[in-house]
Picture 1 (cartoon, rainbow, N blue to C red):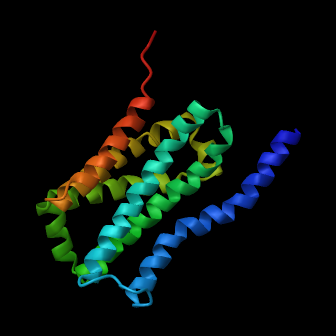
Picture 2: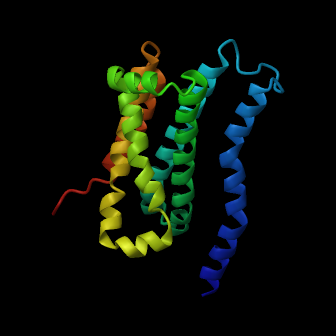
Length: 200
């Protein structure tokens, strides 16, 4: 009982810290957008915003997937308490990534956005991943976990499809310098393999 209470207190103390750390990348980007930092966002600020927000969405998604194997390897069961927050940060940055594209890059031109989604495969993949993230974010509360029961776990397996779509979207988008998306792809492959257990 004492251990459970200590872990609960630890979570309550660290949750605001994780929240601040999760918002820090956005704050840095906003400071750059207003030229408060030394280098701003460079010659193409919209492109810089798009790329960085997409990267952080993917990073938080991979961190979310890493919780279960880390918990299994280390025995640190308390890590599971942070999974929902990290997953919601992945959704948060993915939404801002899309809004930056739709509003700043395309000027909310619905026809142009729809044409991009149909004609550009990497945007099609990105929209697929974002669309699948929406039901995962909406059902992340404890109440929805109770209501859905076993179906909740089945639904949230879509996170693997989202992660694959995210890495693939990044790989197709960069065109030339593919080292970074390949690195993320390697991390994702390790995380997916860590969840595979052969039947005895």
